[in-house]
Image 1 (cartoon, rainbow, N blue to C red):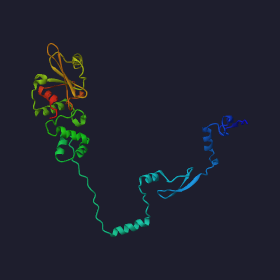
Image 2: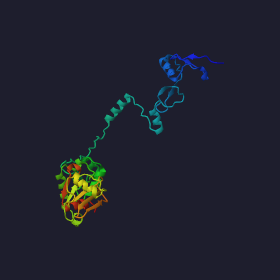
Image 3: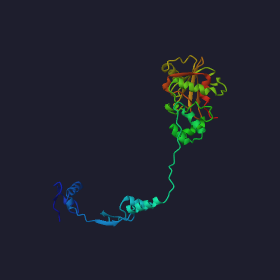
Image 4: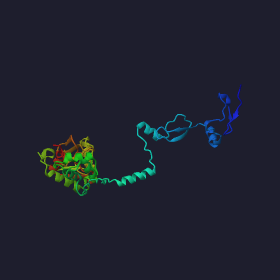
Amino acid sequence: MERENTICGNCGKAINQETSWQVKRFCCDKCRLMYWANHKEGLNKKAYYDYICHECGESFQAYGNDHRKYCSRACYGRAKTGSKVQIPVPKEEIVENKRSASTTAKRPIVAKQKPLLPEYDPTVFPQEEAIRLHKSGIGYKKIGKVLGVSRNTVSSWIRRYGDGTARYIWRSGLSTQNCRIRTMDDWLTILSLAAENFQCVDSETATRGLPAIIVCGAVAVNKGADILSTIIKYQLQMDPFSGEIYVFCGKSRDRVCFICWDGSGFQVVKRRKEHGTYFWPPQRLGATITVSAREFEYILRGCERR
C-alpha cells in the first residue's frame, strides 16, 4: 500500500513517505529540533529516576539513566581514588569543641621564618657575585634566586670560574644585562684584566707578535680568502693587502678564522674550540676592535679548561 505524502510539522514542506519504512513528521533533523524547542510542553518526559549517591549518601534525580551510582563527577573520582568525603559537622558540635579546647593548655604555634636572601649589588658582575655567595655557604638554588638565573647556570659559573683564573671571561650566550658589556671600553677592560694573570706559552704562535683586528659580530668562517678579503675592503673599508691580521668568528662562537696578506698571497687559518665558546664582542660595539698579541692569545687559549 502506497503512503500518502504528508506535510512537515515545522516548515510545511511536502514529505515523501515512500523513502522511509515509518511515517515521518518532519522533513529533516533541523526542523524536528526546532519544532520541539518551540513546543516543550508537548514533550513526554517521564523517565525521571531517584537515586542515592554511593559516595556522599545524598539523594539526587536523573533523567534518562536508570543505572547511575554517583551524583556528580567529583563523587565518582573520590570513589575511584579511595579518598573519603568530609562529613560536615553541625555548628553546635563545633562550639562545644572550641569550649573544650580553650580549657586545655596548648603549646603556642610558632611560624617558621624563611631565611633572608642576601641583596645583589648590580655594579658587580653576576659571575663574581655567584662565586662569592658560594664560598659563603649558600646553595646554588638560593644564589639563582638572588641573581635571577637558573640553578644550572650558577653551577656552570662555579665550575668554570670558581678557581678565579678566568672570572672576567663570561660565556657568550649570556644576555647583555648580565654581562654588563655596553661599550667597547667595557669589553677591552674585561679582556685586559683577564689577560693579566694568563700564563702565555708563546704569544707569537697565532699572530707572530703582531696586533690582531677583531671583526665584531658573526661572519661565516667557512668562506674562502676571496670573500673574506671582499668583506674587509667593502664592508669594513680597510685594506686587505696591508699585512694586518683580520679575525672573524662564527655565529656559534666556537670557530674563528684569521686572514692576512704575506706578500705573495693570502694566508687563512681556521681554528675550532673543542669546549665552550670564544669571548667575542657583539656587533653593536662597532665594526672592528684592535687587540694585542697577548690578548688575542688569551681569546684563543685562555678560556680552555684546565
